[in-house]
Length: 361
Image 1 (cartoon, one colour):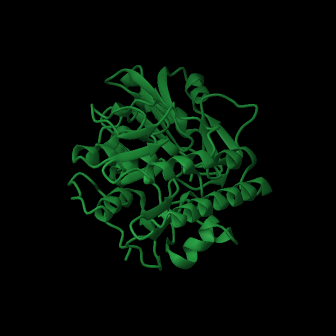
Image 2 (image 1 turned 90 degrees about the horizontal axis):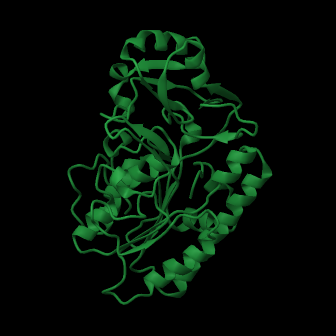
Image 3 (image 1 turned 135 degrees about the vertical axis):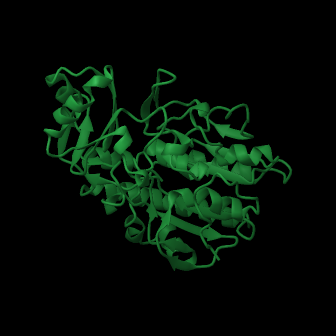
């Protein structure tokens, strides 16, 4: 569920989240990777590694070796670590995806058995539930053992109106009821004795109020560079490497920016990719947001910030059904999702995954 912050399940009164809270496992929160935006977070949940390993640095980014830019691309081969569906398909275990980032095309020649694409924001949750139930109704030798689906969550409405707007809560209540509908329809098929549901979000959300135009700062100092900006982390690829010191000084004039050369980024941030990290990386905290141009209708809600600093970035993790013991547990991490799924399926966890198995029973 896109953009569903850690505290939202508590707002449920008679929906799917209420049921999961009483009969399922609920984590305190799900800590996203950094930058906590939709494409890196989805791919981290699917690969079990951080963005510096899988290479999806933001929803859009630049690769200096390819000399090519990625922007909301459906092309799976930009992902540099094997996603869980490809890992399972290689073992002849059928999988299905409905709008999961990176699942619209084969990954290095490995096909998904069932994949719904192209992505469309207008497809309803009812349509997704119908398809999920159709997949679950297939004969055992055709049925996928893993289904991954993207739902709207509160992301779009929170971006537009901010977290305090009543329309955000209304959207959550709608999603809560769709979740209950999914649970009830699975129950009607008597599948809960062999099916596990995991409900996650890609990131949380916070309100912002200050836009920082990075391109303008560089232009004022006559520095030529290619910029690749997310809301909280920006990559600067200099045309002339001799401009490094001067560019850092120009950017540091803005008091809301933290500026580092590529070599000085702390390894714990997991942001230093060989070909997709800029010569200079700029960081900011909320309520600030990095932009490349001024916007006449800027967002009010935003994410992408460091979850170690901004708790509002934390998302959700709940589980229900087969092999799940009702429980309240502490915080878990997005890179833990893929190894936890493989453990549920009793499939060996590959060495490349950085996460650990979440104890569900």
